Amino acid sequence: MRSLRHFLAVLLALPSLVVGNPALAMQSRIKDIASLQAGRDNQLIGYGLIVGLQGTGDSLRSSPFTEQSMRAMLQNLGISTQGGQSAAKNTAAVMVTTNLPPFASPGSRIDVTVSSLGDATSLRGGTLIMTSLSGADGQIYAVAQGSVIVSGFQAQGAAASVTEGTTTAGRVPGGAIIERELPSRFKDSVNLVLQLRNPDFSTSIRIADTVNAWATSHFGAPIAEAKDSQEVAIAKPKMADLTRLMADIENLDVQTDTPAKVVINERTGTIVIGADVRVSPVAVSYGTLTVQVSENPQVIQPEPFSNGQTAVQDQTDITATKSGGRVAVLEGPDLKTLVSGLNNIGVKPDGIIAILQGIKSAGALQAELVLQ
Image 1 (tube, one colour):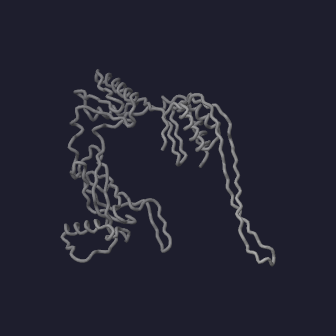
Image 2 (tube, one colour):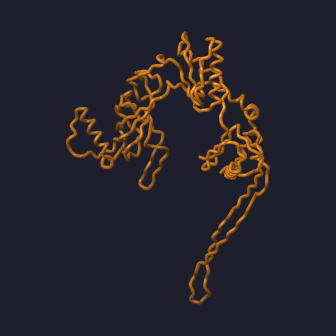
Image 3 (spheres, rainbow, N blue to C red):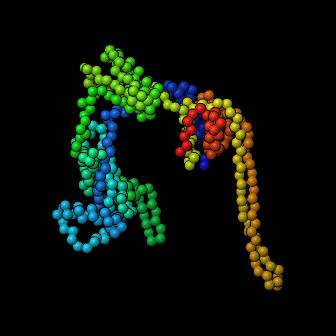
C-alpha cells in the first residue's frame, strides 16, 4: 500500500482559494446541483435473444428457457420447430435494460445494455434481435435491436485461458427506438419542482433566495419556496414561458453547502477528507508492531558407518520489532492545518485510518466518519 505522503503533499499545494476560503470554490450552477422533478428518467426492461455467437452462447440443455424462446420466435416467423433438440451454442438469452430519458419523443434512439441470463461465456460478435422494452406500468415504450459491443475478451486453449473484463454483458449503442412518449408533457406543468442531488437545508434555502432575487428583478415578485432539504418549488409567472423560465433559472449560481465527512475505504486505503472537517486538540501516539517468522529447516546427517538415517530438524526464528511511538498533538481548525498535522505523523494509509477512527472514538473528530 502506497504511502499517503504524496497525496497529503498535493493537498497542501492546492491554491488558497480551495483550502483557505472554500466558500468561494463552491459556487455551482443550479443545473449542476439539482434536477427537475418532471424531468426524471424512467427505467425500461425487456427479455430478448442474441444470435450469431461463435459457439459461446447458452447450452440449450443447461438453459431450457433459451430453447423455448428460440422455438417461440421461429414459430412467430412461420418456421416449423418440430424435430429433435438443437445442440447449437450460437444463441444466448439476455435481459435488456435502459433508461428512458425525460421528454423523449417517438423516433429518437437510446443505448441499451444486455446481460446474459444463461451459461453463455461471451456475447462478443452477437446481434440482439427485436426486443420490446416495457416500463413499470407494463406499456411498451421502445424496441431494441442491433449489434452488441462487448469491451471484455476471452481466449481459451487446451490447458489455459485468459479473460479480461466482462464478456457476458455489453451495450447496443443507439439500439433502441422510442415508440411511445410519456403521458405527461413539460408544458402542461403549472410549476417547477427542483430536487437537490445532495439534500441540504442550507443549499435549499440559498437556491430559493437566489431564484427569488432574480425573479424580483424580472417579474417583480418572488416565485421560489424551499419545501425541505431536497425540494424547492417554483411557481410559474402568468406571462412567463416555462421552458425559457427553466433555462434562466438553471444557469443561476448558488453557493452550496455540505456536511463535514471523512470517507475511508479500508480495502484500498483511500481517504477523502471534506473541506469543513474540524479536529479538536488531541494527542496521538502511533506505533507499528512487525512480527517476522522465518523457517530454516536443517538436515542432520548420521555418523559414518553408524547405520543411522538422515533427518530434517525444524528451526523457526521469530523476530518482533516496533517502530514509531512518537506522541504528537493534532489539531485541525481548518483543512490545511489538519492535512499538515496528519502529514507530520508520517505513517502509512492504514495508520492514518486507525488514527482517524481513534480520534472519532475520542469525540475529537467533528465530522461524520463513513467506512466503505
